[in-house]
Image 1 (cartoon, helix red, strand yellow):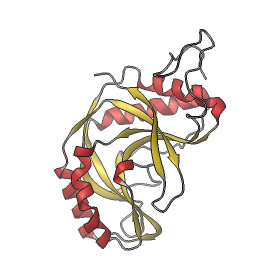
Image 2 (cartoon, one colour; image 1 turned 60 degrees about the vertical axis):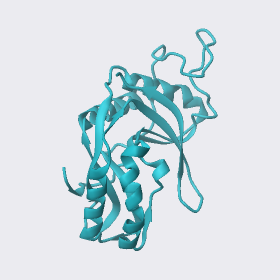
Image 3 (spheres, one colour; image 1 turned 90 degrees about the vertical axis):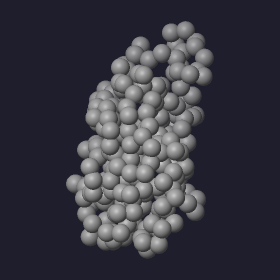
Image 4 (spheres, helix red, strand yellow; image 1 turned 30 degrees about the horizontal axis):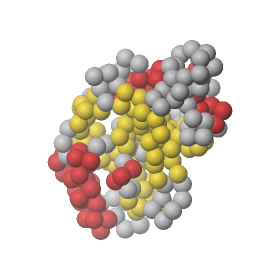
Length: 229
């Protein structure tokens, strides 16, 4: 899921010292231990929940047909599909520890969530769409709660982030110029989403977005924060 779009969706279908502990792969150095690699946890960062391969496979298979229906749209790359909960933008290396603390604090006590892809929709509306997406079903309240916790922790840590209402979704296509989306495209996405398997989301990931390249942005998971089982 890429970043939630501005405006109402049109759709189909349903800083804090001492808060953190040294993260995975980060060697402890006593009271002054760094929680993060400042060179790694810097750049254009966001928190998101990954979408596993088996659950997204029917949508991947539908992409060639979807491309034929959406002239002028740029389809997203399946390997980078994710459900964005908080976009931080450009983060400087000196704030790397705060990024880790935010992730750890926001996920504390949050249960794993049973999720499934479900339905389809566009932002901001069907006649002048900028984004086509697949919707989400299942324990979406867990994601909403997690997004709210991330927002609160980012504010407390002094990290900038985009403040937008969360509409859980998976971005499939973007339009550089607003364009109408055919009903057939919405139906194709909704059908393919329904064919995907349910999964259990057991971690929140911090991603780095790397801009450029012929296929648009690339995404790399640079830290994971487990959810309670």
